[in-house]
Image (cartoon, rainbow, N blue to C red; front, side, top):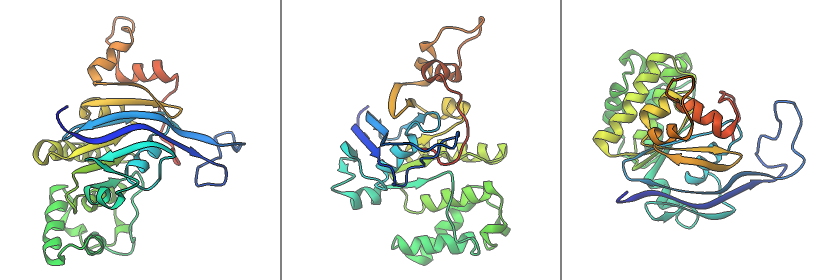
Length: 275
């Protein structure tokens, strides 16, 4: 790894009761005390790498993304993006990154063009140039021309997610944080987003950190994968090497899902309010 895009060293984040932490669990009970969401996590992501983070619900992966994105402050440890500290140099970090989450937030009554034009103004971009760029990005994502000027609320979940990705690409980020970007998408939209991820890495050299619940997606897209459980990284390596962590199953080569189950003892499920 010649150049480091993201450096995470002993990152630690604890939530106290009464904060924004989703305290209610599946059994309806609330936590009675503080919860450590990210527990002394360390790793580096190289420039141009697609780095995956897998983990069961509540493992800390989404909190980790928010820490890198400067949306949360670490209680201990350090996080740097291209050598800029996320706490001391948050504005510099924000100029280098953008984030796509599982739930895209829009002005639903406005069209994709209006939403993205508003975003362009917030970023201080020239609006005429931005409109040309918006159309080019949406075209690149396969968004139908007839949808560009229709209200976002009339679009499918997959189309809305494409608009969210387009918004993230407006600033040409050096680092793109993808927090479950394909969750809830139909198979075709999922393939289109995955194809774009590869294109951004191969053609633009974009560094990406990807959290996902899709084992096949992680296996095919990611150069390396960190598996998290209860706030800690329990394994980190290439998909090929991770599969060597477990023995073959009934004569079949182990899958990434086999590795995940072996290391966490949990089934990966799609749920809201992940930590």
